[in-house]
Image 1 (spheres, rainbow, N blue to C red):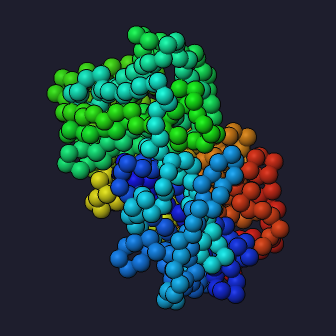
Image 2 (cartoon, rainbow, N blue to C red):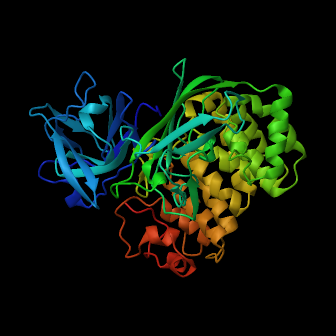
Length: 548
């Protein structure tokens, strides 16, 4: 996502008809936020995407659209967008965007519609703070929160600067910047440090944005400044003795490749103990600087992989193997993986491989899914599960998650149609032999890329690992995932009877059509504990007959 923008995706329900709003039918509205939850006032635009989803079995009607034919944010007809600024725990409506008119439109059952637009920042926000954007269509509404920062001033008597510790790095190195706080007052200045990282794994007091001279954008890997506190420590700046601290840029930015990047840094005024309100996002500009990234040599790439692999998940300069990401690291990762024996090292190497967004990396993961080492196979399936394409019809709903929400961030770069056949062959082999820990991830891949022919192999896998209601949480998770995968397959239902294994019964349950009433909460059944699972055999008299 661009540092010029906060990309906000609002997934909401839509009225089934003007006379029967969606919320009265009991269908859930959905809101999904992808990308950073902040916008920068000194950048030109905010990018918004609004996705309308109709999970019902009837067409829905609405008037107007959130975006006009020229791609501008102009909510019309049944659509409106309200902007609220939050302060002291409550939101005050600042303005509503809405225009009259709009053509009548129709969304078919299981259909979805997506609009995107680029909005000048000044159309939405005129000052920093915490904002809520609420989209309404008919009687349905959903909201997302955006933090806006960048125009506040530093406290009087304080000078802040964030600058790189050096200008040139190779991709995969732990790029760092140094925070320097100077006081011009007659005495020392106490500063606040820490207390802002729990839940996001980095200090929320810093925000960075970067774009290369060629227009390539560095993305925020976390996408949030909202945290749950953490341990604080005292710090002090005195005249002639500034306070300094190093910042790991990798915790805030993922650079897409080599190039020269213009980086902008912001620091929360809470650092100086002078926040004037309880709002988040009271940030001040702290520096603009350039960073040059080059490709590592083969020797540098190998040394970097070896260093990180030895450390496992103990981060080095707040970079681990999954942060390397560039294809230049594929060969050294595979070379070290061939001889790796320790579980943690193998998992870290597979995470590094899974983070490389290329087709050769996907091919390598498919080969490793048949490796003789069980932990290698399990880690390979875990990394395949999130990066594969969505080959199943997007209208299928798994629980409350539409198929259109499930899929990889790098799909266009990491997959080609030629991989479908070997992938499905590998999936069948895994269903026939893998243990419950690996089957949990195999089921996620089946859910994304399987077809109707996988229903019986999925049932057989569930029956193999769960002949009776399992007490193991690992087996319960695997059976639940397999039943969920079966629910999205287009094929004939699996055969089952009262005497079937527990695993097969759960898959049968997962393929039940919606609305089949038996007096049993099937969703709870499939995902519940052993006592709940034992009710699987409390079935109608004609259990083996597929319900009409």
